Image (tube, rainbow, N blue to C red; front, side, top):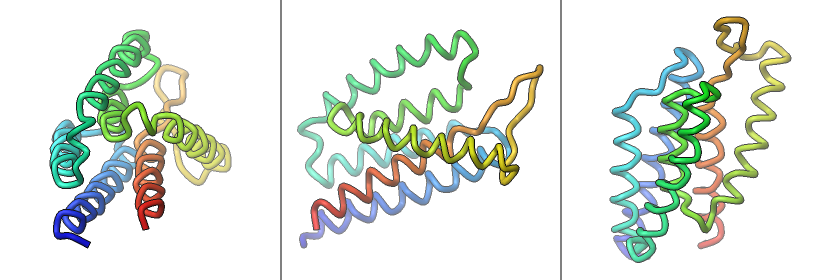
Length: 156
């Protein structure tokens, strides 16, 4: 194992820690701070450099921009929050078009588990104007960390 491989894996661990903190913050306060989105983007850049993924960086950037535009439409209809829009854009930057489908399937699974946890009263949903809003960051974070783990296990 080279020093760059170890460093890129350390960046993944640090990113998972940031994602875990973002998930807990959203679960507790229903808020995702911009600083953490910038940290996630910076960690992606560092990981791309260390792991050699910079060669496909244009695909990740283009895909994240496309997904942002699509999700912005739903944000404008007030179907998703601004923090979720930013966090999902950062997540799509990490997964790119090549791992978007596994990420989406994992995200669907974690959202279903989260909804079940709300129904069973393990966690709370945010109630505003007769609508229930669920904090989406825990599901996004869990799906992205799962992608990291699957990629690591595949390389071992």
